[in-house]
Amino acid sequence: MRNSILFSSFLDAVNVASVTIIFVVCYTKGKENITDWRMIFIGVLSLAVIFSFKKVNSAGVVIGAAGVGYLLTIMF
Figure 1 (cartoon, one colour):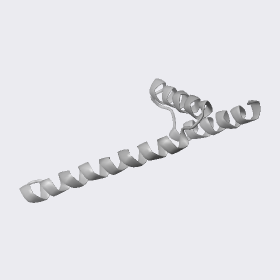
Figure 2: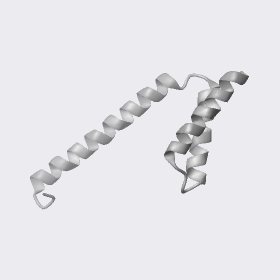
Figure 3: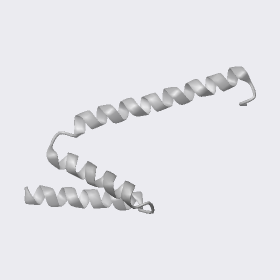
Figure 4: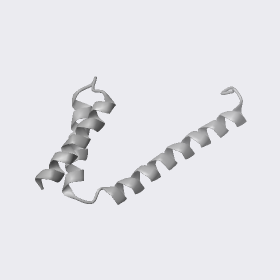
């Protein structure tokens, strides 16, 4: 399929469109949901864990972020 110039261009356009849609959805959800310091703290902490430990499970990051969010809700 990649050997055809027309079909290859079509596939490239579909890839660009899908990445653009993903970016717009992530930006919109981030703008709507990141409203206070707790969410920013959880996001930065999750990014630090993801980039610091290479073999961390994504489910563990989600469960850990939920636990930190629960603790921050109780404490503050």
